Each structure stands twice: as structure tokens, then as C-alpha cells.
Amino acid sequence: MSKVLLAAAVLLAGACGRPEPLASLPDFTMTAVGARDTREFARPDLLGKVWVVDFIFTHCAGPCPILSTRLAALSRDLPAEIGLLTVAVDSEGDTPERIRAYAKRYGADLERWVFLRGTPSQTYHLLYAGFRLPLSINPSAPAEQRAAHSTRFALVDKNGAIRRFYDGLSETDNAALARDARRLLEVGS
Image 1 (cartoon, rainbow, N blue to C red):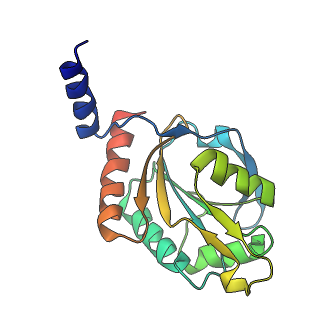
Image 2 (image 1 turned 60 degrees about the vertical axis):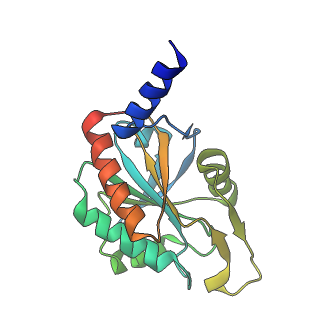
């Protein structure tokens, strides 16, 4: 294939909302916090569904409430077939009880919107090896300042691959995320 045809094919794929995957998520296992109980949640649970993923900690005094408000708005805007996944990054502070209260504050339907928590090594593994995003926990900091993490949303396809990142604090990026998630749902992975 000539370089011109290859370039045209790449541009066309991008224009159709089917960018090449940035990375595939590794195997992982964490705990999903439900309305009354917890259960194991692993990479295979992502497969077969398009997901919007974000990262928060429940006692955050910074951007987390904005991210969760934006994800709650997306939950109302996106088709129910698109899953929402929030990874709680402070293994010590993000207890199941705190996560349930946090989810309730944002009107999360815990059948659709999954909240994950894990050990420090599970959480770091998913963020670093999977999403390739930074995370820093300072146990001696006040609770509302313990974690420094990405404010990006990730779009994950039905094969468990990251398709794109979006600025979770940007209304413009959130509109693009909604558009791209719908397209990905329509065309598959």
C-alpha cells in the first residue's frame, strides 16, 4: 500500500470514530462495591461492553466532585449499554461504606455504574500498567488531600482496549466523549 493510501486510511478510520487502540488493559482483579455487598470484578467483566472510566477518591476536596458530577450527567445522556466505571484510588480511605455514600450522592445506578476499590498494589497496577496514568498517595496528608491522580476519562472498547482519553474537567471533551462512546457502541470494537 502506498504511503498516500495508508495515510488516507488512517485519516478515514479516525474520522469514523474508530481510532486504533492506545493500549489493552492487563489482567486485573479488584472489588466492585454494590448497593449492599461487594463482589470480585476483573478484566473479563469489561469485555463485550463499551466503558467510560474515571478515577476519584471519596473524600477529595479537589476535582473529584466535578468528575463525578460530569460522569453522572453522562450516565443520563448515554445509552444504558455503555457502562460507567469509577476507580477509587485511595485504598485505605475508600472503604465500601464511603463508596456507597459517595455513589448515592451522585445518584449512581450501581447496576450500571461500577465503583472499584483494591489494595494499593491492585490500584497502582491498574493505573500504571493499564491506563498508564499517574497516582500518588501521601498517607501523612489530610484525608481530603491524600491522593494525586489523573482527571482524565478513558473510553474503553468491548475488547478491553483504551481508545482515547478525555479531559474530565472539560465540557467540550465530555461532549466529544459522549459522541465517541455512541459511535464505538454502534460500530463495535
